[in-house]
Image 1: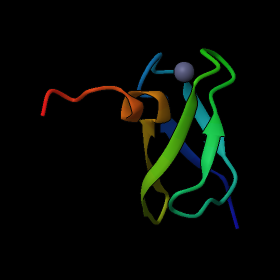
Image 2: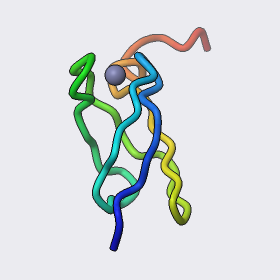
Image 3: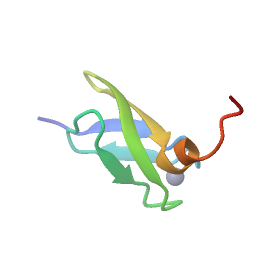
Length: 59
Ligand SMILES: [Zn+2]
């Protein structure tokens, strides 16, 4: 019903997002990176960089 506030993991800009579902992606208006919703709780969203996922995590 209401927007959720979260921080961009890259530039730490505060983002106000409409209700999302897990796996959805949004673009940060500040750094223009694509972020995917990894976890959703009421009033709280965790984001990760989609680009980071394409890189080697060092496994
Ligand atoms: Zn950003």
